[in-house]
Length: 146
Image (tube, rainbow, N blue to C red; front, side, top):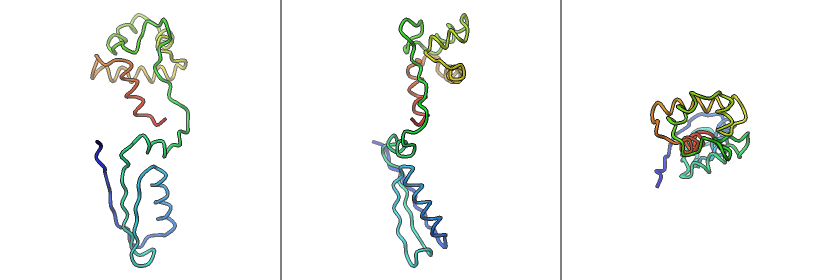
């Protein structure tokens, strides 16, 4: 089970409108925010911010699933490249093929997306050449908010 992380801070002599706006922004990011005021409204406040246990729910709350979806590595039927292909095997295969052939084999339509994925493949292959393209795609998915 994931550990709950909480940050508590005290604010004194603050601008009320700015402080209320800060609380709204933190809540819109999917964070649990508890605040208690002592004295007059702008004299002292104690705020606890807690990361939710479900980070995916927090990402969805923050982005509202807005924006363009990430292009996945989805080799088409009949492609010589499969999700089970290791990064080392792919880079070896790549030596004898053009970038357009490789992009088509990965199921990517945009040259820019192909070169971004190729950069990620080369960086990750330097660390773990036995990683599969499917596992890399899952890791990339975790980095992007969709």
